[in-house]
Structure formats: C-alpha cells, structure tokens
Amino acid sequence: MTLVKQIQVEIDEVLELVDEQQLDNVEPLLTKDKRIFVLGAGRSGLMARAFAMRLMHIGYQPYVIGETITPSVQAGDVLVAVSGSGNTKSIVELAEKAKDSGATVIGVTSNKESKLGQLAKQVIIVPGATKAGDGVKSIQLLSTLFDQTVHITLDVLCLKLSRRDHTSNAAAAHAHSNME
Image (cartoon, rainbow, N blue to C red; front, top):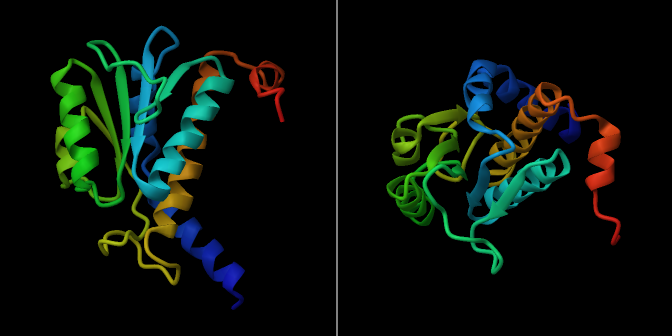
C-alpha cells in the first residue's frame, strides 16, 4: 500500500470515530451575535486559525488568541480551544481563564478525560494520534493525524453553520480576502 493510501486509511478511520452529535451539540453555542475566540499551540494552533478564517468567511466574529488585535475575552464570548492531548499547560490555563471570565469553552481534543475535556462545556473528540500517544495510531509524525482530522472536523462544523445560517458559497467568497 502506498503512503498516500495508508494516510487516507488513517484519516478515514479517525473520521469514522468522530461523533457528529458532538458537532450538533456545539452548533447552538456558535452564533453570529457572539464573539468566537480560538486557541491552540503549534500545528493545532494553525488548525484553530484555519477554523477562525472560515468562520469569518461565513459571517462570524472570530479572534485568534495571541494576535495583537485580539480583544479581551468577556462573559458571553465563546472560546474554541484545540489541544491533541487536552493537557497542554498553556492551552488549559488560558481556557480556565476564559471560563473564569464567563466565556463558554469548547474543547477539541483526542482525550475526553483530559484537563481541557473536563473544563469545557462541550467537547469534540477527534481521536487522531497525538505526540502524547493518544488516539488512533499513525505512521505519521507526532500529532499530524490529529491535526489533519481536526481541520476536516472543524470544516464540517463550518458547513453545518453555513447551512443553518443560509450562507451561500457566493456570500462566503465575497468575504474572502481580495488582497491576495
């Protein structure tokens, strides 16, 4: 079997294990009248940023924690925190701080029993392999399988939101950057 095929099999295996009901449980928490903050470290942070970008395309107010133009998290806001292990100290500490500020925390992790999984109001479990050894085993390095499948899972969530909100592809394209 080729490497491409092996990776495809791994991705399919993880996506089969993602519980779409968890996405449905998160959906009502994400509305256009709320500010949505995203948080993640390393490649998981890049997946969180991709999610924020797509949220912007479909008409939401996303912010990336750590950017200079990101406002303070307040009561009523939503934080989507991504951590494969769910125990990354910097992510857990900031998620706790957001929760203490009155924000709703959504955790995206491979480990429901993790610190992030326990403190989040809703959790999306994406059981791809992580550098901590959690999740479906992979031939890929470190947390690659987790990151790949988080990206797809959060894109599915955006598709659900766009359908719920009747946001067309043309409307999303209109919001896409014209500075490329």
